[in-house]
Image 1 (cartoon, rainbow, N blue to C red):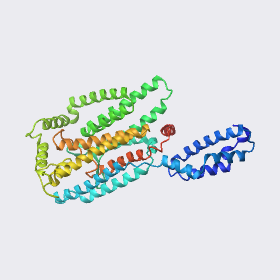
Image 2 (image 1 turned 90 degrees about the vertical axis):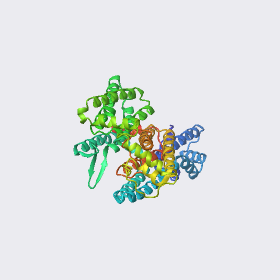
Image 3 (image 1 turned 45 degrees about the horizontal axis):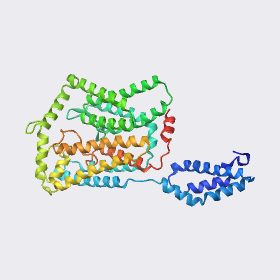
Image 4 (image 1 turned 90 degrees about the horizontal axis):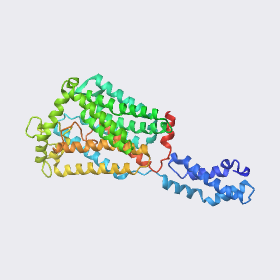
Length: 456
């Protein structure tokens, strides 16, 4: 830059112009980028004017600002490009699923003669909606620097659950939080995948220009952290259903990230560890073999003790009819109707039409969040949405299909539509996905790299 343009970026008229432009843009996160972009363009124009022989910096500044145009209009143009983009279809679907949850709560409360605590469910639902709203407005990129901390915290919570030994149906999956209980293993797939999405971005920055030795060490440590350690924890509990959703989410996440070698290595490691636990049944007192065998035979054979839940579910759905047996009707033959078999009960009490609405809502929701992730350019945002949507999608489809007898019985509740303490995590994760999409046009190309540098 020539001497006459020295201090150009600090000229009062330039500073004022940039401030007026940014004043029209509500997305504060992109203000610095806009300033840099405009300043670079202004400096190019000023260089041209300087070459033409104009000697006064004030004259040059005045000329280039006139050439740039009215700052308010320029700012409105930037605002149109960078303003937040809510995904209204997903928000509408979530609102619909929340309405279904409310209908379910009052119906289940009536059917259980007060055994289902309506107060607790409403508290969990309210806290979940608050968590979703907070996460919606939080900049998801700020989570990146806490990825390792989140991973370590998740492992610690699982260990606490195993040590507390709050056992339900033969599994140590819960921790006690005062009068409430939280299924840590049910929450863990979300927490693990969110942390792994960030860890992969951090490693991508650190491995740039590194040697083969460091890359091999990172590769081996990822196999241990991403699959070996979690698999051991899931099987010690045991928590087979959540291990399944975690593996599904991890596989899709690694595939999207292009980590194909890591994906194949992790798959091989998981198969080996699972085989080890099943073969050495003494490690889990034979529980693993029994539950796996019962679920498999219950799925393949009808009218047996192992198929009891599936048979009762299909029978109740058949008796539901087009419009159901009535709101809050009691049917004691439906096992776990306030948990895994909630979908069955809702079809029985409110009919096939209501069941079809739930199925359509679930399928459309899954399709829309997949589309939402596909439209994101930020690798970190895409990884977050892919991981979370895979877990939610797997649980939604599995719960519905198992109630219809299309898949073996699993311990999944109907996500978002069955309010428990886990609902807080589920809706917070949905809010995180919506936050990522909302900021898709506010993304700065090197944001996650800059944050990864701060982590180091």
